[in-house]
Amino acid sequence: MAVRKKALLVENIHPSAIALLTQAGFDVETMKTALKADEMASRLAGVHLLGIRSKTQVSREALASAKDLIGLGCFCIGTNQVDLDGANGLGIPVFNAPFSNTRSVAELIIAEVVATAKAQRWEPVEVLRALFTEESAGRERSALATRRAAAGFPTGKTFEAWSPAASSIPAPTQQALRTLEWVHRRENLVVCGPSGTGKTFLLEALGQHAVEQGLRVAWFTLEDLGVLLCRHRADDTVTKAIARVLRADLVVVDDIGLLAVSQDAAEGLYRLVDAAYEKRSVAISSNLHPAAFDELMPKTLATATVDRLPAHAHAQVGQTSGDSIRLTRALAVKGVTAMN
Image (tube, rainbow, N blue to C red):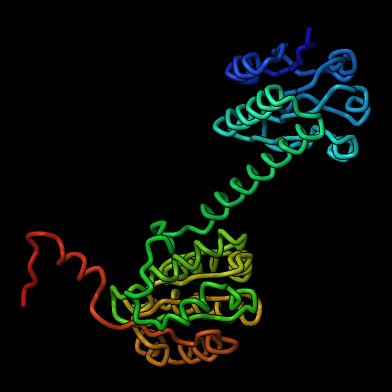
């Protein structure tokens, strides 16, 4: 008769884990409280999977004594309570699912891997390899979601919905921009043209693509920069605030020229471009060519800003033109006619 695997879940881990692991062929033991150091060795005897939360401390010695342990799940924020070097040295994968909605995902993944391993009679090394693969994929998905949320994109548009033929920017230029080599070289991009010709769409799609490639992006309007400057001027922390913004690899400033520019917004744009010079990439969309920025802001600030933007630029200006894409699509709706 085959020996059933054993799972130990402590600190009130979600009940669904019990059902899933039982269904996968585990004998599941649960505890409402944390495991204490002096009972760790005896409790882990014969345990194959251990699920803990924040109050259980798992030392190298405890891991070494758990001869049958093949996986450890930390269903809490962080893994500080586990000796990760010890676990790594013993070949024990450690999973971390910090929030309630991801705990259930981690529990499902472990249960599914173990169920598959049992059905296909995998060797222990194959189980570990599958768990590591799932853990890596999960971390990548989580990191992507974090980068995307931190960027603050306005709509979520990506290149999946982008039509290269609808843009007046030459196809070779579009292809070069999508490589993101200009971001890695810390070059700048200015896309200017009439409203509705795809400037914001292109920059957001490039930003989303950058995030998917592991880069950090920060999205601002010119008004956002003005608010940022005003908020931090009171306590003289503007420089620190700009430095935090430039933790991103690519900073996008959208829709310059649509509205009148305040002194704070103009200064915020200058400070950003100046601080990013040769250190980070800045991408700007504008209804006006940069040469006309002095129509929007004080000439001194406009000149200083424009002087720094073209330097080291991949595409100094990508000019969009033609009819408004949004207007064209709106007029295509049945029953809508243009008023000439």
